[in-house]
Image (tube, rainbow, N blue to C red; front, side, top):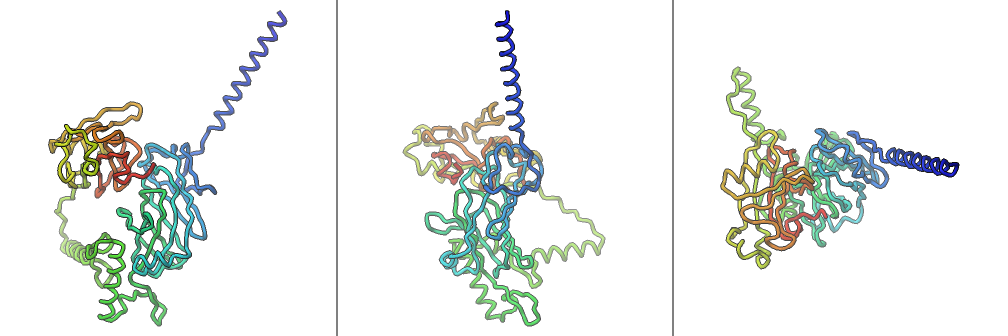
Amino acid sequence: MKKLLNCLLLITAIITLGACGSAQAKEQKKVSPLTTETQLPKNGVITKARMKTIVGKKQAYNFIGENQKIKYRWIYQGQQIQNPVKQKLKLRFKTQGLEQVKKAANNANESIGFSISKMELAGTPELQLTIPKQWQANKAYLVGDIKGKLKKVTGSPVTMKNSGEQTILSFRVLESNVDYYIVAGGTKIVEDTSGATKTGLNEASQDNSTQRTQQDNSFQQSLEGNEGQPTENSENIQANDGATKTETENLKGTINQVQEGAKSTQPVPKATVTFSISAKAVLANWSDLAKEKQPYVPKDGWILPPTQVSLKSGDSVYDLLVRVTKERGIQMESNWTPMYNAYYISGIHQLYEFDCGNLSGWMYQVNGWFPNYGSSKYKDLHGGDEIKWEYTCDLGHDIGNNSK
């Protein structure tokens, strides 16, 4: 009997210890939720568990770091994050030995280099760099080192703002594991005898003004790789007061309406997005395409070329796909996947997964980013967004998705 009692006591102790250990494990697993301002740890890593605390929230979250006296800030939109993954946000900068980079950008005035660690982006964060000096330039571009050649990163225009003795650069990050540079040039900033800061372009004579304009355009075209074509940073013609001609005309019209007591009767324009469906990757992998599917691939690859589509409140990328294909008579098939709580697009225009090899299927991107979750969960859409559905033959690598 005594032996039996001892066994029972031992079993009870084991159970008690096991329960305590389990409680301690649960205690250790507790994760402090992210706040809207977070100082990055030394390794720059934000764990998956912490990213999970901001999934779907309708506010911005800032992650702040500093290296080589350059401050940087990552800004993520919680609503865009649906499938949280670990983010590696530590940056290292290169500020010396950039002469060749400047030369390649048609003798740019300023430049800075940095690398973003390899990771799967949880969204398309904005990255702000604060340089502790005023850059002598008024145009800036983000370029990537692609196989030893500098190429402008499309879809990521850089905004530049001089604030006192600092320069603030902002742009969206669409891809990791790349060596990046920001190069800047254009009109240099000079000081007149009174000490006031003015641009060289405004102070120059007409001949010098023309020469500087040509230099600005040359700098711009060297990065565009498409001589003579306007870009998002060169489309507006500046009026003398710094406003564009269109802005000036709109301002005058507004003043006239107020003075006359008139009320605007113009209808509010509906928000639209640019929507397209492409099978262009198949053209480069034609021998892998199932023969019975060949008639469904247009000669130019476009099932639906870039088209303006109305955006309704609450629309997801999936909602737009359903509406667009239905309105235009394009075949589309999808299946609900409980595991991912989202719809899976199995086929569009009779092109299905594996029709062009073992790594083929449909993927979507928004403003250059390939979300890591289903299209029915992507609802952070805004007027002006660009949505692309693309058929890949190589898990996305052939259409620009290098996140994995």
